[in-house]
Length: 205
Image 1 (cartoon, rainbow, N blue to C red):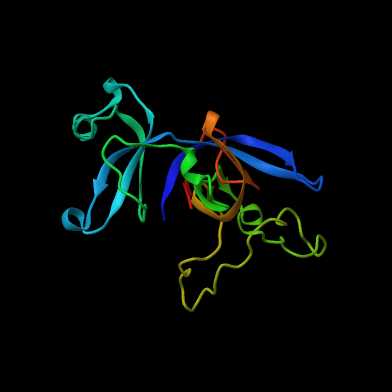
Image 2 (tube, one colour; image 1 turned 90 degrees about the vertical axis):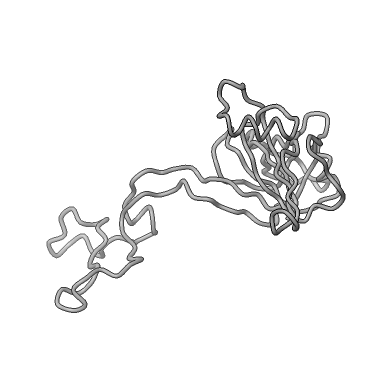
């Protein structure tokens, strides 16, 4: 789907026409520059590669510098590909948040906050082990049995256990577009999106 790259600014709330308080997320969307135009003839599929947020040349590798020089744009910090763009775009073209003016709903893709190493109660919602009597001491948040001993004599893949939680790619679908503010490159959507303040997200129509 066509879309743009943005940065999560934070959360706020707005009042609807009927007086309801709606929680919203503010996203800085674009301006994004076209750094590569992929075609079916050359690449096997049609897509646009967009860049977001300029960076210094000293922080750019030589292959990246050549790639951006070919497009005639300044080095970009973040790159992403989007398909199914309508209309023709050329290298160096700038796409702003105006692209989403007539859009009512968007999908937002981001990286969720990392929670570190967590136990099964927090990570998977386990209820803990039953009663606190009958010899229970300090095992209320333990996972319990993870398999039989004699057969199959192993722990199956996918067993829900303690481990790293968060820092996953998360897609939130069908978020309502509350307001588009072209003068500030801002998009306001209803509800929350994954990631911390300042994290990079992809916004798809």
